[in-house]
Structures are given as C-alpha cells and as structure tokens.
Length: 314
Image (cartoon, rainbow, N blue to C red; front, side, top):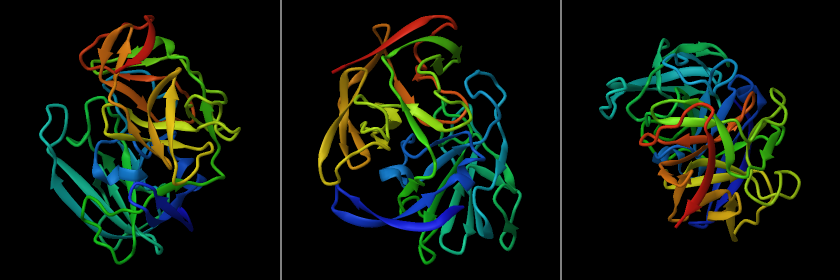
C-alpha cells in the first residue's frame, strides 16, 4: 500500500491544506505504468487517485488482447464491495465494481475490478482481487487498469469524490524526457496511435514521462506531464521545481499549453494537430519499460511507419 507516511498539500486553487497519501515502490513495482491525472472523472481532481496499469513487457503494441488480472495494490481487510451500473458503451461491460480495503491507516477504494474477494477477506499486496473489467467509465482508447484512491478511516467510501491527494514517494525515480513533437508511428488502433519518440532513457530502471519545456525533472526542470491534453479538463505536472501559491506557464515542444497552480494544470483552450490535422489530444502518463507519445485520434487514422509531427494551435 502506501508507505504509511503522510504530508500536507496546499491546494492553491482553493487555499485548502489537505493530507496527502504517499504511494511508494512497493505498489509501483507491480505496475509498469501509472497516472494520477489521466481521467475526466472527479475522483482524479487535484491528483486524488492513481490509475495503475498491470501488464507485462511493452505496452505499445495494439491488439484485442487486454490484461485482466488484478493484483491488489494494498494489504488489509476487505470491508465492502459494491456493483454499480456503468455508462452504456458498445465496447464495455454494463457494470463496474468497487472494492474497499481497510489498510489500517486509510480506506483504499479500488475500482474497475470484478471482485473475487468479499468482506472479511484479508489481502496482501500482489494478491488477486479478481479480474479487471472494461468499464463504460473508460474512453475507448484507455487500457484496462486498477483505480486506487484513499479516504480517511471515518470517511464515506462510496461517494465518487472525497479521496485524499496522492503523491509519489521521492524514492521512486521519475525521469522527464524532452520531446520535440516528432516521431514515427510504431502502433496504431481505431482510437489511438503510439510514436517511437521520445524514447525511454533507462527501460526497467525508472519511470519516465514527457517533460515540460525547461529541462529534466530533478535537474531544475519544470517537471513531467500527466493527463489528457486537452481532452480532459485538467492535467498534472510531477517532479521538477515549482513554487506553491504561484501560477506558472507550462509548455510542450516550444508552445505554451497551460498554467500550473502547484502540480495541477489548467489547459489552455487549444487544439492538438498531427501533421496539420486536428486530433482529440495527447495522453500523458509514467512508464517503466517503454515510452513514446500516445496520440488520441478516434477520428483520424495513422499507419505504422508514418512520420508524425505534433503542434498546437489556439
């Protein structure tokens, strides 16, 4: 689960101090990709949840096969499960699920897993919780994942909002990789395409993501992008150096794309172009084994081997 430590987080948009829950290597070593902001739902506002993607090897090849095994990211006692109706989508199941685990420090909320556990069961990190479902809460370009959020022990675990902000432990190495907006398509599906650039600097050794302009996180850079630009309302910037209480502009490939208040980005009103054609946007996340820009493009087709240049316009 978390490493048990907590810190305080000042939400600069509402001047509210909130307790943060730290997610450390013991969770993330089991999940080759993660994201705090790459979702349109309120549960992820201000980075108050983390999506964990379990898979083996390179995540980039497209295909019909999707991971279904759901290892538990926390240890503790299962105290509740609940099944809810999901938005109807032709590619998704009709119902989604919630598993609540009492970790001793927090209530962990786990979504998108059809539970093979029940209240009273004890689980350890890595134990099977069941199978991930392809939920109607997902957009079609989103891979199967385990959603994890934390509440105070006396909080209502069933409300969609109310989870505590999540931070990544400083012991987890995050590498920001500069990107000039260019690359060659190495994988394509009906809803997205993946480029070969930027490349992962050290596969298997650290989590990497696309850096904001200004350098590498940890070297005085501005940080690493997280979220969906601009198709989700906001995004995030992790790592780097920022001043709480001060809005700072963030840029990608030489163009301003938003304003960061603390670690949360408000995207500018812009359009992402691929070879001059508007697409839905770019999907940012952290990956340990392989990187590459993910283009969200359900209305535009790209071919493997095609060279692409990304730009933004207002």
